[in-house]
Length: 143
Image (cartoon, rainbow, N blue to C red; front, top):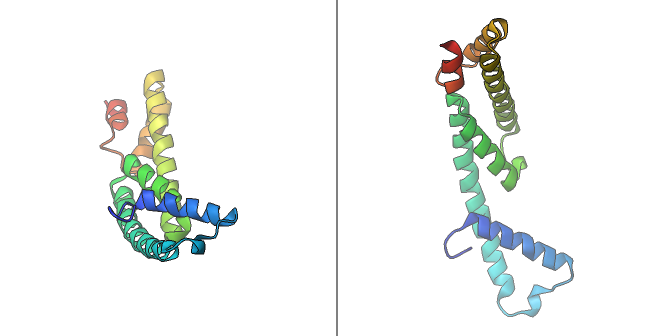
């Protein structure tokens, strides 16, 4: 994990190390291991900070573009890293927007398939308010 700056590999390795310590393994008994673990911790901190910065940008972009795929990926990855490391307000905003976009998308799809004019108007109104003009479900329902 350290050789290729592989965040996921290094993260999992450090989790395993913590489990081994908890089970009674004493790494100081092995020559050079503690130093390697300290180096790995430092690298993981650096990679985590970089990942947080990247995902924060990605999450903001997903919010700006109303992109459910971007929001979903950013939120899942933030959860893996530990959402506590992120701006809670931004995470909550991302979750809420993803939920609203997803349910509105489903509402549009359902109203279109049922050909229910009243439901379709309501769904289109919600979609317009969310800025979903580029979504295929919006275009299909609007047609």
